[in-house]
Amino acid sequence: MNKKTLNRLGITLIILLGIASIYLIITSHLNSDDSNSSFQNLVPKSYDETNTSYTTDFSIIEDGLNDMGFLITQEYYFTQVEEYTKEKQIAFWTSKSSFTYSYDGVVEAGVDFSKIKVSVDDNNKVITITIPDSEVHTVTVDENSFKEYDSDNKFWNPIKPKDFNNAQKEFKENAKKNALSKGLLDKADTQAKTIIANFVSQLIDTNKYSLAFN
Image (cartoon, rainbow, N blue to C red; front, side, top):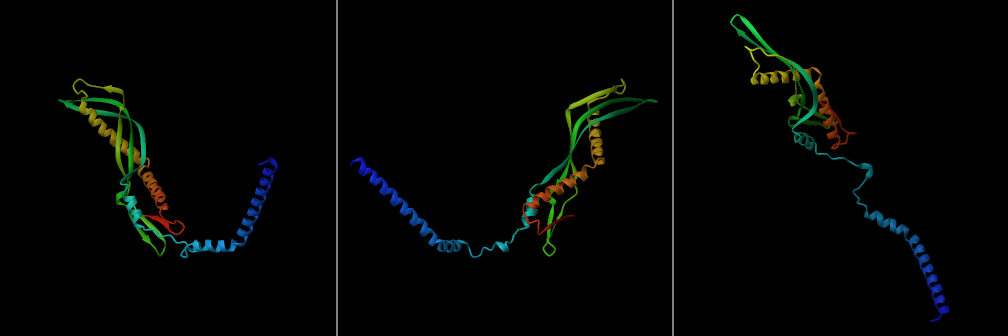
């Protein structure tokens, strides 16, 4: 087969491909209405985007919150200086020993989510969350942070290891009182409500239901 024949075959092939392309374009245009009709038949008749409805099993809200158990919602960190005094009556005089010390620690407060109750008012579209009061959960002292600043250890009334234990009990109680005086529980309540609101907003249509707390 010579070069001239090959050129003719190439031109013929190009023409045939062009004709085929034109045919496909025309056919596609003529059948566009049928194609649209066929696409419409694929859409479920029950679907109506103008009447979309949300169905929520509200019991999962309470179940989900209850599963969280006791949740720490606020922490109060401190470095506290205290003075421990020990008195001992000896005959007609009182012997007093004392030492001043400090610890670092944290007071944790939270809410027992397992006691949360959820009720729904469908008429007014209100979801009411009843939560228990927050409470102090733990007072933790960092033993490695202990510092002693001053001591007055009398010979007749020495400071003993058990006195350090008593001092730490007093220290924790004072730390708890300080945390409470600074609004620890109020902050714990507020944070708990924020957590609950964020959780509920993932489960319900907040445009239809409002949230209330008891």
